[in-house]
Every structure is written in C-alpha cells, then in structure tokens.
Image (cartoon, rainbow, N blue to C red):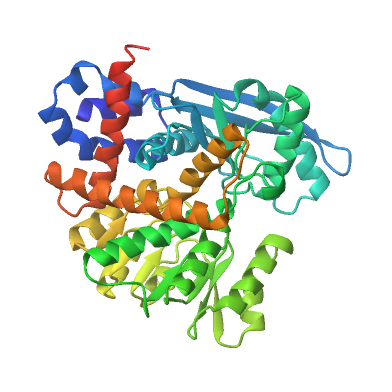
Amino acid sequence: MSEILEIVKNQSPGEPEFHQAVEEVVESVKPVLDKHPKYRNHKILERMVEPERLISFRVAWLDDNQEIQVNRGYRVQMNSALGPYKGGIRFHPSVYGGVLKFLAFEQTFKNALTGLPMGGGKGGSDFNPKGRSDTEVMRFCQSFMAELARHIGNRTDIPAGDIGVGGREIGFMFGAQKKISNQFAGVLTGKGVGWGGSMMRTEATGYGLVYFAQNMLAVKKNSLKDKVCIVSGSGNVAQHAVEKIIDLGGKPITISDSSGFIHDEQGIDADKLSFIKDLKNNRRGRIKEYADKYSSASYTETKNGDTENGLWHIKADCAFPCATQNELGKKDAEKLVGNGIKLIGEGANMPLTAEAAEIVIKSGILYSPGKASNAGGVATSGIEMMQNYMGSYWSAKEVDERLKKIMSEIHQNCLDAAEAYGFKDNYVAGANIAGFIKVADAMIAQGVV
C-alpha cells in the first residue's frame, strides 16, 4: 500500500493534511483489498484519492473603504459515485487546496456512512469574516457565488456551511445564487427555516456527536449521565454538543476559541450556554468574556507551543474536540489517557494528529473519528435536501428521530465492519472500511469514469 501514499505525496506535495487522511484510510482498508482483489484490479484507491474536479478561482470584492480586496476561492468535487457532491464551504485564512482535498476526501466516507445518496465535496476561501462588517461579508459572498454558481446545482453539488460560514453567510450566498440562476432551489443547505431550511440543521452536528458517544458508552453498559466533559471550540458544533451533554445529564466544563479557553469547575449549565450563544453568535465576542462574567470560571490564553497548560490536560471522563483539524497532539493524547479519559468523540474533522490517534487507539479507550461521529450535520443536510425536493417539511421531533436513527446505524455499521476485518471495537478502522466498501462498489458498478 506504500505505493498509493507515494503517488499521493508526489502528486500533491506540501499538503500534509491530505496525506494524513489518505494514510489513515489506506492502513484501515488493506485487509479489505487483500480479501477482495477486485478493488485493487479496478484501481479504486488510486481513483479515490484523485478529485473528480478541483476548481480554483479569484474572488475580488470591495471593502467598506471602497478598496479592492482579492481572495482565492475553491471547490473540490471529490467523488460522485453515491450521489451529487455534498460538503461544506469554509472561510478561514488557513484554507488552501490541500486542506480542502483532505476535507473532501473525509467527506466522501462520511456521506457514505449516513446511508443517504450523497457524494463528497468541499469548498471555501482564504477570506476571514472575523472583524468584517455585514456589508463586507455580503459583498464577498456575492462575488464568491458569482463564480461558484456555475459549478453547483441541487442535483449536481449542494454546499453547506463550515468554519466561518454560518447562517449569515449561507443567506448571502443563497440570495446571490438565486438571482444568478433565477430559481428558488435547494442548492445550499443550512438555510433559514423560513426559506427552505430544515428544523434541527443547526443543532445536528453537535447533537449527532453526543448521540454517537451515548451509543458507544451504551455498548459498555454506561451513559453520559454525571460524566465530566471537556469540549473545545465555541462555534455551532461545540455549542450544541454542550447543549446535548447537558440534556443527557453530563457536566461540560470547558469551551474555547482561537484566543484561549475557559474552565468552569461548576459546569456550564443552560443559562451559561445561552450567554455563550449570544456572545459568539450575536456579539461575535471572545470567550474570555465568559470568565469575566462567571466567577466559577478561569480563563487560559492559548499560546503557540504550550503543551503543558492546554484544555486537554484537564481531568475529565469524556473529551469532545470540536474546533479544527490537528488541534490535539501527542502530548495532549498522553495526558488524556494518563488522566483516565473514558471516551474521545471527534466533533471536528480530524482533530487528532496521527501520533495522537495512534496513542488513543492503542490505549483501548472509546474513540470515534469525525467521519462517523460528526456525520449528523451532513445527514441532516441530506434530510434538508429531501425536503427541498418534495417541497414539504418535517417537525423538529421528526428530524431529531431520524438523526438519532442515522447515528445509531452509523455506530453499528462501524462496529460490524471493524469486527469483520479484524479490528474489533476500532471505530476508526470500522468507519473507513464501511465507507470505503460502499463507495468502491458503486464506482465499480459505474465503470471507469
């Protein structure tokens, strides 16, 4: 299998996140290829690691000072074997082709695990919405969509939100696409409930993550009740993971942003979470304000290279990394294991480095990869797509029940696939294998295209 990795590194130099994602999958599916030579004969892995289409474009726009700004936009259409491309749009200075290829590759397996007819894609820009006015964000989104619109469609490619792209940005992009196409179609998901969106879409990724964790604990005759939980991030996923942890009787004690993290020993309750939602969603403030308001909380500034005082060094029962890729490193993993952590559930995409993941897997603790445990967001996006196709909408209760069922099925499929190929109780291998087989079989059936 080393030849696949060599091909990827030679063809995609300087893209470490993509290399890491491919290596993880390749190691997991080797027994599948050994047992079923057809996957090697059809060069499935060689085809999977190459995007079907990689689009890069200029985004020029005017800021509030009437100065021209220039950013770069992307859309990676990775794999359409199971359905139209589906995956978020990310606005962040760290965005470049390599990180989007990694995300689109992961998305392909994640979408396959949901059981819904969705291929894998991802897009974004190096634009940073932080500190920009609403009108600047609107002008950027309109310019971004002026190019992207020709590459997407409700049966072709249906983007959603991601880091830096929330309801505001989705609204601006949807409005621009609607004007360009002269159609009111479900070409983006994450829309407002009053104009084509689904109930529960905002909550789905965080809720789904916690439902998956509850399923993992249930296998061990346990639950989240009374479990102390550490959560990173303070965006949509983290907020709703904290909300569902509270609902299920757990005790979340941390939350973070790019500046630092708070540790509230008394726990974050519903009222405190409401403050966080207002702070981050409406006022777009910094998490330090939480510690300024609540005396039970301490604030620690995040410093580059500081591995001794990080969020992951706080003693807890369950950990939910919900911020960004590779946020949890080797020393963090060693500390978590040493502190007796019982479960790590990935809310972000690939938040553990390869070294950290290896330590966690060898420790035998419950550990779910993002492609499985954070699939609730895209699953509900798929539900939103179905509702848009039909022109009718389901209640929050109906969508939540569907979400619970999908997360339970993903959990069981991961366990079954892992055991079938000699990786008993390894959710990482199980997720990779189950997703791979589904996509690979569809690719073979559709010929060399």
